[in-house]
Image (tube, rainbow, N blue to C red; front, side):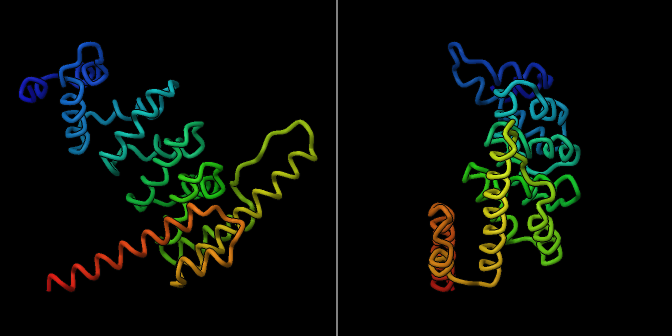
Length: 226
């Protein structure tokens, strides 16, 4: 099957990847042939078209494929547009891409600021993880942007009082995230950070605790192997 699919051009592979009725594994095989090509830097325009599509289903598929393909030349512009996509999966894919590509510029920084105060916790968590691991220089720049409110999400309400309320709430939430990240970067235990920030959702701290325990297990297994 794969030998046959490998002879097809990208448009035919995409059609088979989207095939559903009576699917006998063709869509799965076609999908991975496409992913294999994208990983080699071939036919990337088809992935770009998915990421920039006006159809939510296409962009959702593109976000999934992006996670499998990883950073590639030619994807950055399309990925950056996902920073304010209506789909949380796309916004999260943007942060994950930035994390692994190590790209950072004005547009990416603005997108990360928005994602840090995202109402979807998965997106917010990915932005926190990025900021906790990035360089001191980038974190300093990012922190200044967040504290100044530059590039953050602006709520749209006809009543100015409603907009002011949410602007203030978003500003507090963003600054709180920066303070949490500073604690993470300083090496403070997750349980202690959680105690200092009772307003933050427990998912953030549970993720930090999980990472700590995973790191501990890895260290123990590595020591045992030696």
